[in-house]
Image 1 (cartoon, one colour):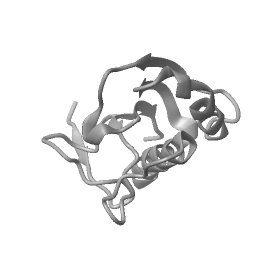
Image 2: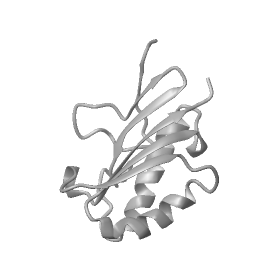
Image 3: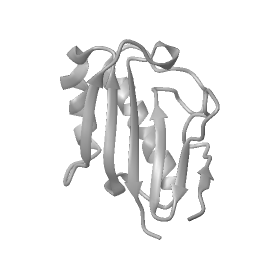
Length: 128
């Protein structure tokens, strides 16, 4: 099955040698997103809620560029620098999946790109 590289202005440009996402068939594999605002390329700092919201909007933008949406997400991996941010991150995250949330893992890590406080990657199954 062929793979398609996904590149959209609705999400930040990659900061390394990777694609925003890869589509193969109905599956979209999204690279980890950190809280970078696509229009400015600047990191959102401060409150973990604001950072989570930006990351989720980046994921949403990639999916929308392929005709999908958050309801198509089937698996999410969340990386947090501080597990103390779990509850406030989760509050914002839950608003993007009001029903039938995807499978998910959340782990604490010692460091992330650009000294981000979180990174989220996802897999979605979108209509053909």
